[in-house]
Image 1 (cartoon, helix red, strand yellow):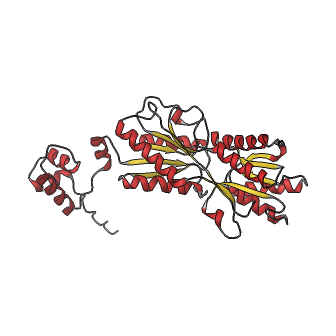
Image 2 (cartoon, rainbow, N blue to C red):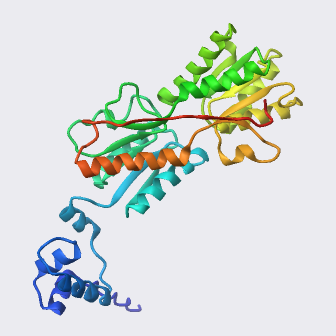
Image 3 (cartoon, rainbow, N blue to C red):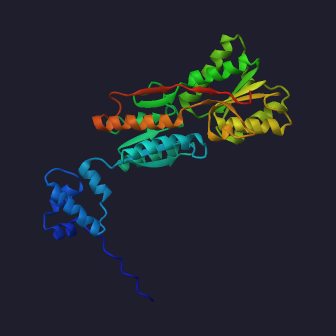
Length: 341
């Protein structure tokens, strides 16, 4: 049996203190950027630490500074291109401030959402940004005494006491419906996921408002809520077409559903928009691809992610856990007209 190779020992603060000829506490202050040591000593300690290959203990530093330099970001579906763009905005803005971001994907599972929130709290992240799958059931609304900055992103429970960054979803739903109506469509349906909290309700509300303003009925059979995936859009529109009684146009609650709807329409031998028009919501990169060219409601995804981090930074600096002076950021959606309507 061969002997296992001896692993090199990791340099410690005690080793640095001995090499520098100063106390352990002085080394700790120098490495943690605290007062009580001169700049010459600070540089000397850091040079010795670098020469020894010393890596600071992030947990220990977090205890000293009461900061871990980390944020948690929880999203419901990493396969939906909308969320990676949100995450990009969060990560880029956080990185500019020297913060690392832990990304958690719940896969639309409320249990996983709660588990991730609990785990991030235990890891003592400096703040949590949550793109929730539900408008009511999450730990943000249950915690009252922990001074941890919390921000909802993309969706927020009604009457929440925490900060949020969202799009004006009512306006987005209204823009989509009004556009179709003004292009001559009269029977218009609305397709979305069942989970989504206030965001999906608001988009539907905007759709209904536009239909009523133009004195058009909203047929119950033309409103479907299942889930947010491409396959659901395909299955929903296929059933509509097979019934021989389908809308002239559909508004999808997100672009993945819209892409599935387009595939389903074409698979049935119909044309978009001649036989059925489609408008999505989000403006994911795929929406503009040749052969898809999806009309949609654009959300400013990168800016939304950046804004969420900026709120977190303000809350960290102020020592406010987030429920004393919540920020409400509502961004304007933008209609992007392409060839599907």
